[in-house]
Image (tube, rainbow, N blue to C red; front, side):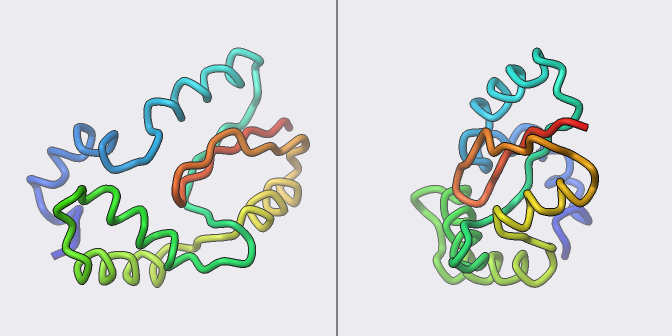
Length: 122
């Protein structure tokens, strides 16, 4: 069963996300600062440092979201599934995509495990 096919998971998504996303509250507070400066684009997504593997960072993120009682085999399977299905770019590739889309002054303003927050101007 896929996560969004499970009504209980969908109903619990908003409440469980802050626990699963490293730095979730800080990400929102920090996003408010660029928004206060009227930045036209703020984005957050999975990414990873250049020279490393997406799977490694996703594994860490899944383990964090699962807590201390995380089943390592399940975390590994979930991370592999995410790495296979999500178009995850490195930080440098994220920045290049923003520039190619016509944005300037792209800057990383948040990093928590594989989550990256970006701000850019049109």
